[in-house]
Length: 218
Image (cartoon, one colour):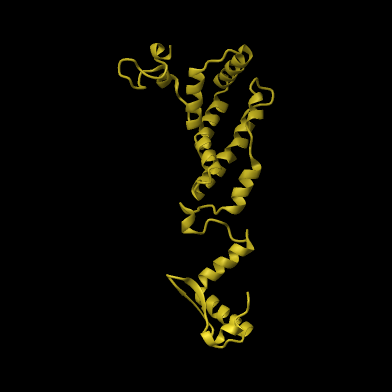
């Protein structure tokens, strides 16, 4: 059994130290660590797939330059499974989105390391660059975004005219309110109309009772 073989835990100490996994786990990413553990707990029965794994190990063993470059590149890859799950749950932070982009940008570089005539060229088919995701994040999110959406300045200027307009209004709030007040006075014909703001009601338009009949329906 897994327990008797001490695949994941040492029977004496009850910890991972000294287990087979702790000895062979030289993975560079969180994803790789979880995959190795899964492979160890569920060994292959398909000989063809097993030989493909052995060929991959042999190729990297014989090609030290490609091996070292791969190790270096994998060090730039974040926990993609975790990031993708957070994106799917709509709870990813702006910085996590840029981390996702940077991690996905590593994939084409990894793919170029795998020679087309090598016994592991099948790995290229599994390396999906997700260019549309990379481009969307690059075009939409600031290069150095804040930690949370509440801090603002997450979306790049020029992406949305409506957002740019709101930002401009926020930066020039006093002037915006003065212009809005003037426009509404001219539109309604109510000279005493006022536009203001308070913490209780937010932005508001104030008119006297005597001028209520002049207030436009919209």
